[in-house]
Image 1 (cartoon, rainbow, N blue to C red):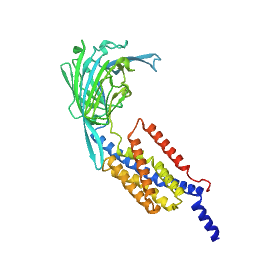
Image 2: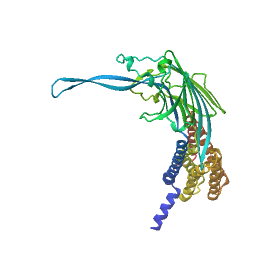
Image 3: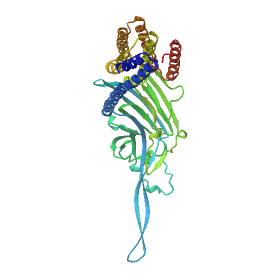
Length: 448
């Protein structure tokens, strides 16, 4: 029995097949703690998102602005027939209904200045902003185009101005709309639309000022976060955004005009021009005002790829790092005939897994580059010294150290790239595979 056991141990220690099988199983086993580390990174990332959303919700969320819009009530009189049970004849009654017509501007100009600043809570940071929005333009002479509306049923003296926004609680000034010589105070009203609505009081002299085009203007000071966008309700809509934020992402139905965008390390400028022909809705709506937010355009004030996203991307290469490191050890073992115990493989693998916990914990308190350097040097030093102690060879421990340094450097380059990440990654892996094929040809594979 002892003889059979010693033969089995000898076969495991000397057989190439047994060594490869053992190393492969250890790599698969180490995927379990690596998966736990990846879950930890996701958990910390979700925690950051929750804190950032809470900060943004208290300061002010995404800004979507639509307005001003003329809202004019009109009456519709319908004849309703009903059978009189006593005479069996039809009784005709007139019932009166009040509806609303919504008229959009002919010219709409929006000039926006956005000043960003960071807000911190514990170790988490969010970027918020205060925007100063100047809106001006003019309404055309209002004419009802419905044939069944009688002039006397249009309630001109009850016309109002409405402005819609997604971020009502972020407004930081008393909003007044100037319509010709009228100054109209705005107040919030309840509605079931996607955007919140503020509405002016009745424009009692609107029938007088409606004899020609009607000029308007108003100013908004709004706290917001994530994005500032506008709905192009003007027959011609011109908008511009100037900000000190250096990482905008232009989003929505329309992009800035060619040559208008300017992005530097000190901020950005961009302008848009949208014509009625460019969008799929008319200038007048009756009865109900539809949801036009899908036509919004503007800029997302995005935070560049943060530490958690980079750590998550780095951890996805964990299998590659462990697999290639174990493969180098296996090749050293096969070439040098030095026996490396499976426990020693496990210790090296756990050190490589611990790399990612070091990376995420340090990056929460420092920059990703510093965290990456510290974690790399720590694990590199640990594995190199451990390798020297088990292999008793400076040459092999130096080979392991250089291999890990090159591998972590290669992964850092891939993480920083976006457009060329796949190309560089494919070339790098092809080079690594070529090197492994070249060095493995010296191994005597007959020893099974």
